[in-house]
Amino acid sequence: MKKAFGIFCCFSCICLYPSLVNAIKVPGLYEAETLVVDQSAESRKAATRVCLRMVLVKLTGERNALEKIALTPLLNQSEKFVRQYRYKEIQIGTSGPDATPATELRLSVKFDEETLNKSLRESGIPVWGRERPSILLWVVIERANRRLFASLEETPELLELLYKRSEQRGISIIFPLMDLEDDAQIQPSDVWGEFKEPVMAASARYNADIILTASIMSPAEGIWEGRWTTYRGDKAYNEWVTEADLLEVALEEGMDGAADMLAAEFARASVYTRLGDVEMVIGDVNSVDQYAQVINYLKSLSSISEIHVTEVQAGKMKLALTVHGGELAVVQAVSLGRVLEPVENIGVNYYRLIP
Image (cartoon, rainbow, N blue to C red):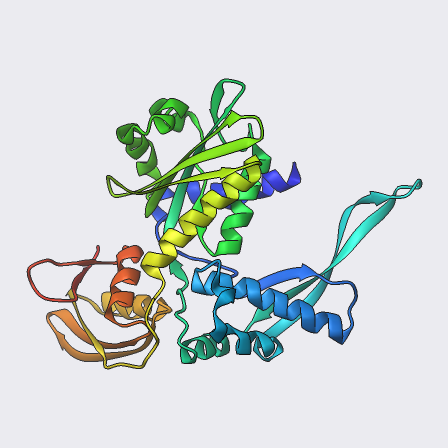
């Protein structure tokens, strides 16, 4: 129950403040851990390579990223990118007639973000930035002719599995609170029947970038199927089906599908080159504090490497940005931040500061 409580703490902090939930700077993208047999240099080297493999999946957004030939030289130099590492001894149960505590040794590695990103881009590998869409996840499971929401109360082990898979893929999911307000607006049958209106109404309070629904069933013994749908705004824009012999695998494949879909849209698919500046105009900037807010916000975006203010007028500022991934990378990152909003019919990359 401790693990389930940990999940609740993690996600209830987000859900209790829905106005703050939008694009999320995903933590832990440059960290991973794995089992080791001992603390020797040889074991550490092999484990560091394994950890880098896991990190590369998160940074590229591709579960098959390791098949790219260009990544082999980086893996062969995995220790070069290590910023820090530590060993952890974790109790996993007991063994023997005297119930001696059983433990396993794990190596936790944190890689250097700047060095690793630079090497990836120089190798022509796109890097998915830290700013990633927040995903609100409604999961309905059919068991014994009963359909119920996956929740902390009913299925804590499944929430933990979904959370872990999202971590492994570098995406951030939000579980609904499933409180009285949710109960009044949405039922399992609404998700199962793919009724958009109640799903949108119940999801509004969470203010997530993307809504993901899943209907999980077992049509025959030893077979689990999942129907997955993503919504953005008020439209369903992507659907896929998973099938596996285990419920857990069907759920993991569903999360993989969501990560693949997001990576295809938000991870840069072009070779990184240092191109000319991207111009941007920001309106409704009427004070020094608002000026600083704009600058600090743009500095926080991982796709932007340099910011130059080229002109300041009454209520408006013009900027030249040097970015990783070109103009589209900035447009996508800003669209998730909810700090700036585009102003139509004025010009390309013209935004206003949201009050």
